[in-house]
Length: 204
Image (tube, rainbow, N blue to C red; front, side, top):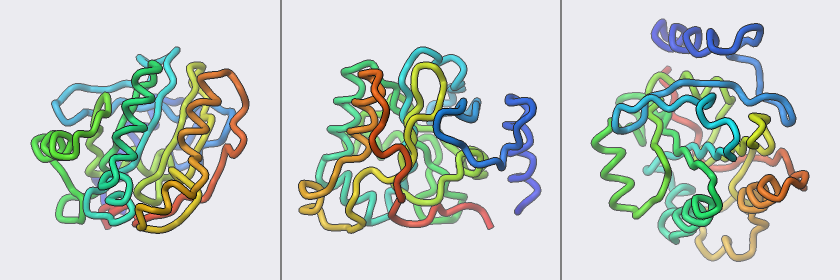
């Protein structure tokens, strides 16, 4: 682990006294808090979103599993549907400089425009501090946080681990189901699922 990554994790952990930044997040407990710059240089603080349902989506435009979701338009539709219901969607890029999927602010904004994506913010995490804080291991990977700040879902976007667009209509839509359940004040049927995709390209 690089010195910069260790320092970034320490900075994030200061916002959550008593909990190690490396501790795995748990369903039903408060989601790890953070303050991270987005693609336009604005600091996004989870604490400021209390009362809102928040989705964290780990992404990497070079990953074919991510490509399935964006190439079909399914991820963009899910983002728009969620936003229409008041959900705050945060896409997260944890690829390190020089690794597949790395993006600075300008490239991240261009990707959003090119893909016609609709996140509220794209969070830039080149040190991997936020990714490690949440234990993100693949792209795509989804976390849903309730308005009370508790983690309600973590895992795959859906149930079929493939790069085939046609599988989207056959799969159980875990992320969509989780968002709808949280919005309805209902328990999430599958609160923890196995994420699939490309490994997050953290700094070595």
